[in-house]
Length: 187
Ligand code: SF4
Image (cartoon, rainbow, N blue to C red; front, side, top):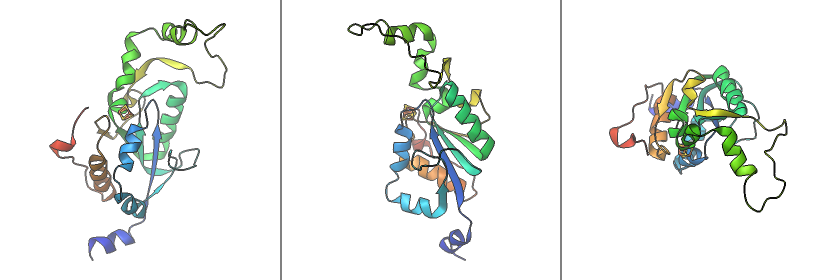
């Protein structure tokens, strides 16, 4: 049986994706696989993702997490993904080590909020937003492995489309993902 016939007989895997404290750049990089997106949707169905309208992550084979953890809602979403995804992947520098948003970690979060919301010139009577609907910030931005167990880390800010394609097709085919040296970078 050739590869195409074998893939056609294989049940589709279910993939969920989310952006926590990310910039959506890693999702843009996923879209950078360009026409291979047609091949991808033959191989997988998407569950919760910024690319779908599904609000909660259901049982999935693979969860791709962009972004670190900066607020209470991020923690909630990340735990939901961990509960439901057999394989959880940290995608991109923010998810792997906190990334650029973690540069706020040497600052006091209360002082940051005051600086942005209260002390800005030209905004009279401004207050720090306190509606209970808004998620509270954590004191530090955390990589996701400090909150849940992570199965794979894909570095890069963002990882290239080619790296994400290689990683996903390895995983979907049941191979241990291996990225060549040129595909591994941290910037
Ligand atoms: S790793 Fe880079 S591209 Fe990905 S979410 Fe973070 S800042 Fe954006």
